[in-house]
Length: 337
Image (cartoon, rainbow, N blue to C red; front, side, top):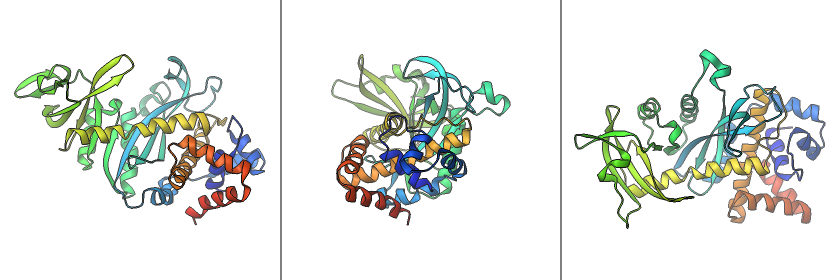
């Protein structure tokens, strides 16, 4: 039993609840045997390197980081779970929270690392903010010497400490920032939302200024977006100069991380593990990440439009064409040969 076989079983199982029991039945193993293997898996970025090479080749990439909560309403004994705000139900629930680090070329996305985030109520003096956990992720990513051109983050991570950290590491970044942020522009202090130089005309969708914030100069970009309640303006901050539309393109690449979380929860069992141990649960999630990487391979091979299309493709092969299905599974394993 290896990581790849476990991940393939997550793809090929027709069961709705893709927990360890479902994977064991798909592989013809006992649940206790599979749980023992899952506990001993050592999954890090080196596990994903063959997939990175296969999907992206030598392309310059964007690294994106985002967090999600996994509702475990009736599983209070899982290490690190606590009451958190669940975006799906807009209520507080017992949740397990992770930060995912992903690589994308703008078309395909590979999740390559995950870290658990544990609330202060549990960690006390050892508590780390999500931005501090993101620092650890970036440090790990940089140690592998990957061809990363840009780093992209949501507004949660736009703290001056984290931005200075990225600057010190010579990382070109784009991240969302609050519209109430007060910057110094042309010798005056002004909120981004009230800055005349960032006002968009009817024929403009983005505009950039160079302004000072927290003692340093940054590039701030206003973007027009269509929201649920009509048009709105969001703001980005970056530490390098380029055209406004390039900032927008880089930031928009993080949408793939949201798709990862959606597919992981709905189709790959990211929330299905019933283990009480945090490291075992995290290994299950990382196997979901490997499975998602295999979906990117299928998506690229058959020129499909989404990860969901790739899931339907492999499951249709399982039902209709056994030889093609076996060849496809073998091609996944050959990536790691």
